[in-house]
Image: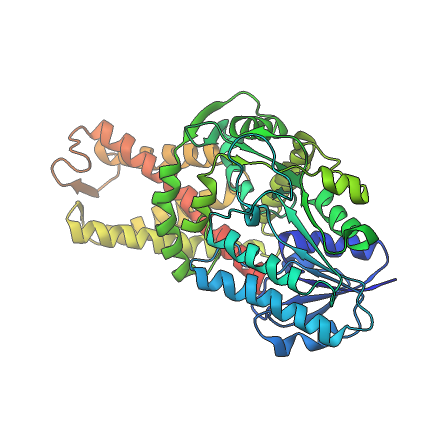
Length: 472
C-alpha cells in the first residue's frame, strides 16, 4: 500500500484516478481548494487537505511522507493568461519544490499531467510524436508547456514523468457532454465548416495510463501522449455520439468556428455574475479552431505497455448512459420533499411571470380589463398553471415540456381572443407582437412563448438544485 497525493482530486479526471487508486488498496490524499465542489468525492474514503498549489504554505502537510504525487490541479477555462500561469505554471513549480523539500526520502515518482495543448496541433492529419517541436496556440497550452520545462528542470532531483492526455471524455465530464441533449433530439452539431481531425481518450483508460506510467522504472524523465490511436473527424465524433445515444438518424449541421468566437466573450461575462465555469472561453475557442489535434500514443505502449482499451463508441456508450441517468436523477430532485419542490416551482414561475408583466406594462404591449386581473395571471396562469405543469413534466423530454406549455398558453390566449373568459380581457397594442393583428396567429406565437416558459422554469430549478448539491 502506497501513500499517494492527488492534486485536483475532486475534478473530472482526478475523481476517477482517486477511485482507481483506492481500488488498488492505496492510501490516498487529495489536495482541494476551500471553494472546491466535492460532490464527485461523496462517500469516497480519501483524506482531504484544503490548500492551493498557488500557496506554497498549504503544500507542506499533504506532501509529508508521500511516495507518489499525481499533479492534476490546473486551470482549464479561465479568462486571462495570468490566471493560467499562476496555477498551471507557477503552481507546478510550487508542487515540485514542496516534493523536493517534504518528500525527499520517500518520493518514488512525481507524475505531471500536462496536455496535448502543450505540444500544439499538428499541421496535417498525421499524428505527431513526443519529439515534435512544441507549438502551443493557446494561453492554456503555453502555461502547460512552460510547466513541462519546469518539470524537466527538476529531473535528477525529483523522479518526474510527464503525460499529455488528449481530449478526455467519460462519466462526470462537463465539456463534450454539453452537446448530448441536442443529440438526444436528433440534432448533430459538427464543429467547423472544414473537416477537423482529433484523437480522444476514455477517462478510465487514461487513469490506468497514469498509474502505469508512474509505477514504471522506464518512464523517469520521459514524456508520453496518452490517447486512443483512433483518428476521428468531427463528423465521425458526432455520429458516434449519436450512435451511443441510439439516435443514429439525425440532422447533421456544421457549427462555424466564428460562432464560438462570437459567443465566448458573452460566456466569459456571464461567469462574472454566476461564478460558474463558462461553457466556452476565447482561449478555448482558439483551440477549437484548429483542424488537427492528433497525437501518436505508441511510445507509451513500447515503454510501459499501456494502450487505451475503449474505442470511441464503447467509451461513449458508457459516458452517455451515465449522463442521462444522472440527468434523470437530478430532475427527480430526491433531496426535495413534494411540497417544498412545488412551492419552489411556484415561486420561480411567479417571479418570472411578474417580470414578464412588469416588462409588458412598461412597454405598453397589452393591458388588462379590469386591471387587477394581472395578479390572477401572475399567480394563477404563470405560477399555479405553468409552474405546476413544469414540475409535473420535469422528467419528460424538452420537446414534451415545450409542446405542453405551448398548448396550455395557446389555449388561454384563444379563450381571451374569443371572449370565453367571463368579465375579463387583456387587450393588445396594435400589431403586437411582430406586427401580428390576427388573434389566431397571436395565440400561436404567445403559445410558443408559454412552451419556452416551461423550459426556462425547469432550467432554473435544475440549476438551483445543482447549486444545493454543491453547497451541501
